[in-house]
Image (cartoon, rainbow, N blue to C red):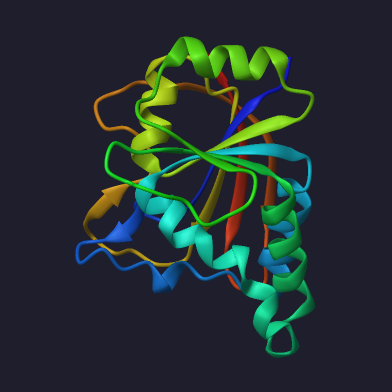
Length: 187
């Protein structure tokens, strides 16, 4: 069975967005971006909420300015476009990307069936959707990329008020001060 993996870039104090909704402070440098690409390469399906999809839709057309982009960004664009995308949204009318469909609600049984039938791993993106998947016991692994910044408030990377048992599988440090922590969720 495929794994469902939640990956998030977060401030050291655990936020994916600051109080004003900004996340420009989370932009990875080339070293971190290349590392992320290698971890994302095996993903066959991305599950995301509307806001995450709207942010990530950039990668659908990123090659239009390919000469301006670093090779690592072009590589990620190819990874993103090759994968299936499922967008969970009650309000989104249409999606622009290929291999992308809309689901009106997060149904844990349907996601469990996706995991069971998938040949490649799935990734859940966006902290709110990930919180639903974690609550349903569907998330198998967690990749946290910690940015060397404290933002003080905002949208949390991990669900508040929920205890999670975690087994550290790997850790990586980068010159920029980013730290990658790879965990298996244990029940």
